[in-house]
Image 1 (cartoon, rainbow, N blue to C red):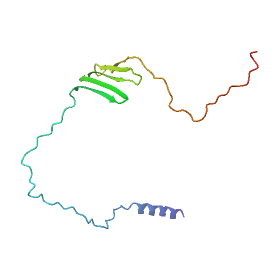
Image 2: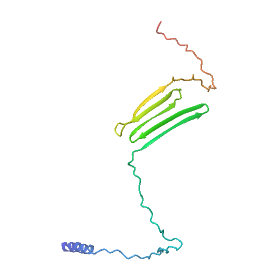
Image 3: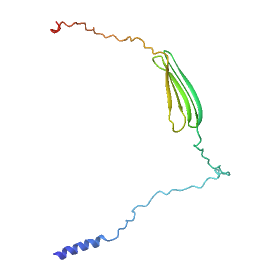
Image 4: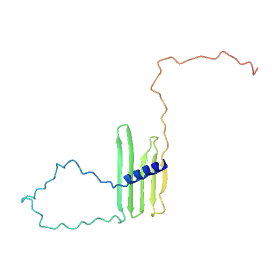
Length: 155
């Protein structure tokens, strides 16, 4: 009995060691691209294009800009800004008229790549708030009651 089990294991091991081969394909590709020769009316260019030269982005930036915005109608927002930069040194300011009537001005500067943004915020004018007048009136009457209960304490 033991001999039979050992023989069966040897037969399985021998059958497993056969090399595996990929079966041959059963179809043939039907599409083969064709390339037409270049027509005579499109000859090759007779010149050589200049070699591509990429701009260097390592140049320090330098610019100036400014703009103003003025509104129209009942609400007139006013906003302006200006900035100048030469390398890392940047300076500028912007101001806006706030809804309460004050003008907020922010002045900022950056001296170099390591110092960070240094800003100063100032306000001009006095804040004005209109008196609140609700435009909506409820359609139901307002309750008008007075408590009738008098507390017993405090006599």
